[in-house]
Length: 360
Image (cartoon, rainbow, N blue to C red; front, side, top):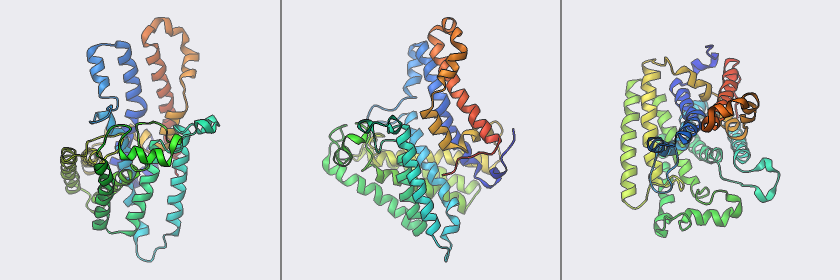
């Protein structure tokens, strides 16, 4: 497989880990769940449990996909912003870039889940998508990274989680429609907020903390590449997992749909561990054999996500394989899902081989 010429200047572990996250989202989970639904056996349902979101309090494997996405956005920022942190370098251009990226991510989020393409104002959702959470977290983290030293960055990260925590704890109600974050969304966005259980406005504080934690991880790698940085990432991961569990015991339950401070710490801990492992394997040891194909997803993440969520290729698969329906029976929907995401993969592979990468 042809390797893009720009790959050498990138952090290999980040591209591969990002690719793994998107592969889970845009191939493995939908295809696997489709197959297991057709099987409909107790063991199949047990596996599917881990490929779905926790109903409310708690954390499953599938709950890590979105935090890891935000975290890795932060991890790349110390590298992309490095030249703007030098004394005397004007920051005007980078602030324009930050604003442009924020607006584009917010727009793409409205296309994916905000019903923007319905052209019906009554169906429009303003703030209810992963890309928009990334947009807000990116702005917060970018402003902090560009203007503050690492100790202050850590302090601001802690403050973001503490500010989020205080009114939530004072309110004391963590039910879906009784928590403080839900009240803020209801008052600010109203009917334009989308899913009634997820919260966005107040949770923007912890979105920012997640991206900022990713940026801190990136600075660990940038300042000391090698086994030492991998060890620091792993130790930080263990500490953050413990901190998240302690915070949950102290009264802030781990709830992904509210993006609570405890969930922020707990999920970031797993993100640190994953990045530490991949950094050691790919960057330190150079053991990327069999993993390089994940860059097909990882180097075109926005394209992969938007196409995977917006465009349904099942009609193409159905039009050339409808004769298989009586043969496959209950497994025919799984075949359509497999074909849908295979076509997406082939599109991304074609873009990768031609070094076509969507930059925003």
